[in-house]
Image 1: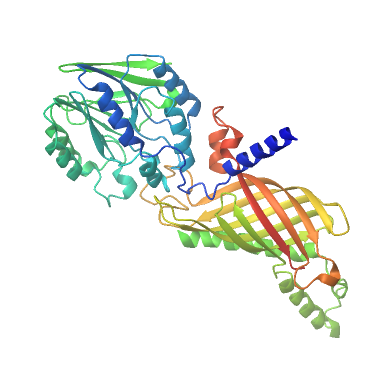
Image 2: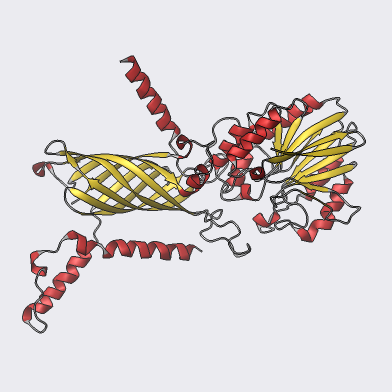
Length: 266
Length: 228
């Protein structure tokens, strides 16, 4: 009898779990507001460090097996301080895709932050992103390093919103603490790529350079590894990470006066 | 955009209508076709005309909870086919997705085509339908969703429609046929449950061992009422 009751209760719980009103219904159970939590964790863990090491992955949409593999590999390294995901966690912007990605990313032993990708904006995807992670423009200070994450998917909004948000960048620059000496900017779509508002690319670059000692920018979107300089060979360096399907990610080691990168291919 | 989707739905609805007369079984007066010009010919044509429109009267109603097409759904439909075996059903339903802290509420419209291969009689009035299966086409209304990608994108940039979802389902039902002397307006009531999977979940599930069926399946509960 006990067994039957147990089985019935389990069946009922499974059934409740399977109730969904619509794939685009933004009902997200479990941890939300992850950006704020993780930014605080990163600031706390990195405080006072002179060498920072972070992993960069991107375009994990619909590559759950591969994303899990990457996360496991990162977990086996003890030297990485945090992870930056530069967008496209979802393929269709479905809240459930966010939940599945969170389930994998939350197994990371270190905190992670994200940038919103163009696929993440589809349907109610942007609302789901706001609910699960928080603002789509934010920054944090990891010891001497200022890290900025920007929404650059201008085309998704048909240029009807301020994307990239220069007001955010200006206010962010104005409130930089003295402890910060260098900056890294994370985004999904980089200048020159399809979906970026290239009409303001030069102005965007000026704003980026207004940050204290901009080291480099990281991005994704084109599903391949690439180092490029959209504003001339002496201009800002952009690192594009390959998608999760390729089972690769990048590790950057940033010190107060130099940096190196390493591509990890699993 | 919206017109385009409405047109598609109208085509499907009229197809449902067209398959009705043949399935319903014609009455005796329509069996033999009188010769053209004979006095009965006109009557025959009128009967046929009436019969056609009569067969378009919805003969069942349905309320449904959840199932990835809306929180609560209500609709009308048609059942046709054999009396005790191989039943077909077509329904349309309106539903809504509730407002959430992060998003607005939305209205939905659903077309369902179900197939019930057989019905087992348990008692005189109670029958069990161990299998119902079929296709669901659902559209969600709102400016965030598109049937066809906005023209600003290059051809098939995303390659899917965020407004239109297709689901496949499997389900079971218990049917209570109200004894004739107790009938007022309703002939039978069925309790149904269904487990469905949407197209976008299936394309996520297939290439990923990480996802389990439990991740992608959606449960719905429903009540179906047959008027005649």
